[in-house]
Amino acid sequence: MRSGGTWAHEATLRDPDPSPLWLFGRSVSASGNRLLVGSLKEGGPGFDGAAHIFTRSGTTWQHEATLRASPVVRYDHFGSSVSLLGDRALIGAIRDGGSGADSGAAYLFTQAGGSWVQEARLAPTRLIAGDSFGWSVSLGEGRALVGAPARQSSFDSSTREGAAYSFVPAPDGTWALESWLASTEGPGNNGLGYSVSLLADQILVGAPFGSGAGRAHLFSRAGGAWQQTDVVVAADSAAGDRFGSAVALSNGRALIGAGGANVADRPGAGAAYVFSGVGPTGLDSEPAARVSLSPPWPNPVTQRAELTLALDRPQYVRAVLIDVLGREVALLYEGEAVGTLALRIDGGGLAPGMYVVRVSAADEVLARRLTVAR
Image (cartoon, rainbow, N blue to C red):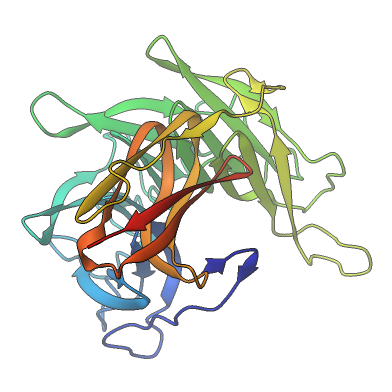
C-alpha cells in the first residue's frame, strides 16, 4: 500500500485450502479493490489448477471466490497466468490438451449476480500439441490477449517462433479471434508471446529468445487492424539476457524485464528497462499527458458528492479520500483509465470535518478539498 511517498506492506494472502506444491502465487493481477492469484497445481492429485479472487474492504483483504475451469481437466495447470480487469478475469491453462498435449487454452470469467461464472473458453482452431497457448494473458476493455510462446513458426514448421492472439466479443455474445500477432523477424525459436500486455490500442509482446538477447514487439491498432509499429531492444543487450521475459504498458511507458541480464559482477542477476514515449507509431516523443480534476459537488456534502477526472490518454490512476490526520479513509479508484471518470464519495458514513480528495496520475498529484457537514 502506498501512503504519501512510502510503500508499506499491507497484507499477506494465502490459499484458503493450502497444500504443498500448489504453487499459489505463481501468477498475480490487480484491478481496483480486487486481486487475482493463480495456483496452477491446486486440486491434486491431478494438478488441474485454480485461481482465487480476493476483495479489499477498508484495510482488510478477504477471499471472494475460487475459479476453476469447467469441465475440470487433470494436469491442465489452470492458473499458469492471470489477468483481472473490473468484473472480468482471464486465466491461462498451458497444459490444456484440447488441441493436442500441452496445446493450451485460456478461460474467461465474469461476475454476474454476485457470483463468478465461466464466460468462454478461448483456443484458436489452429493450435497444435506443445504450443503453450495461455502462457501469458492480458485483459483490456472489450478485448482479451493470450500468448503462445511455443506456437509453430509461420515461416518454418520445424521452429517454435511463438505468437499472440487477440479476442473480442462477437455479436452473438461469444468471443471470437480478432487477430493473430506474429513476429516479422523470420524463422527462429523467438518465444514471442512469453509475456504480453494490452492497453487501449497498443499491445506489447515479449520474445525473450529473439536474436539471442531477446526483444519486445509493439503493435498498434489503426483502422481496425493491428500492425507492428516497433521492435524494442536494450541498448546494452547481450546473448542470454532474455529481454522480454516480462512486459507491461502504462501511461506512455513500457517496462520490460530481462531475467538473464548480467549486472556488474553478478552474472544472470536480471534487470528491468523503462522506455518512455510509447506512442501509436512506436517509441516516439509525445506531449505530456493532460489531467484535470473538477471541484467536488455539492460541497459541503451531507450524503453523496462527485468529482470528474478527465484524462487525455490511458494511464494508471489512484484516487483516495484523506482525512485531516493524513489517513486514507476511502479508495475511490485504482487502475487504468482514460477519458472521463466519475469519482463518487459517500459522505453519509463519514464523520463531519475537512477531507482531501487526492488523485495520482501522469506523474502528478491533484487535490480538492471537501467538507462533510451534518
